[in-house]
Image 1 (cartoon, one colour):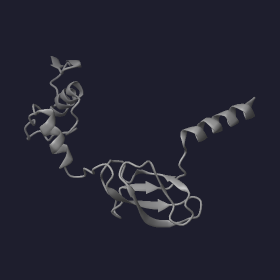
Image 2: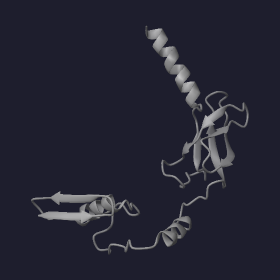
Image 3: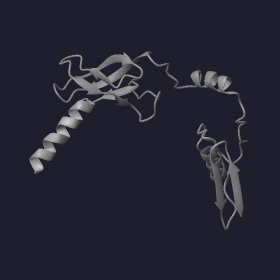
Image 4: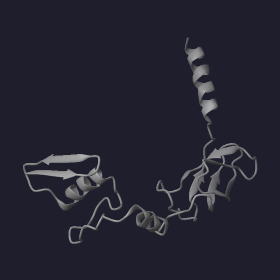
Length: 150
């Protein structure tokens, strides 16, 4: 079996000695179009239509479950490695760090469940449990380690 799926910029050619599953075909379609809305589709459901204008698509994305508008106040679960603080605080969606409510050290915001927009069991979008490393700090650390190893 040979299947060719062509998107606007990518063409996928699949050669197989067997029939492809629905998941395999949909995955190839998503790869060629760049639309990853549903990674796996149940075999009995239909493939959704992908031919919507960009404006309508962007409006739909903003209203889908888990969508958070940039700048919206969200909760952060703080587990401070400096002072041991274990509290909730707030930050704006899209911020890469927040400050510990007790010691005011900058902590890195990572997605609470690993998925952007989802909340964990405490209703937090982010977990801040490690120090924030800025680009200039990383360069200084690399320089220090390279000098120490010489």
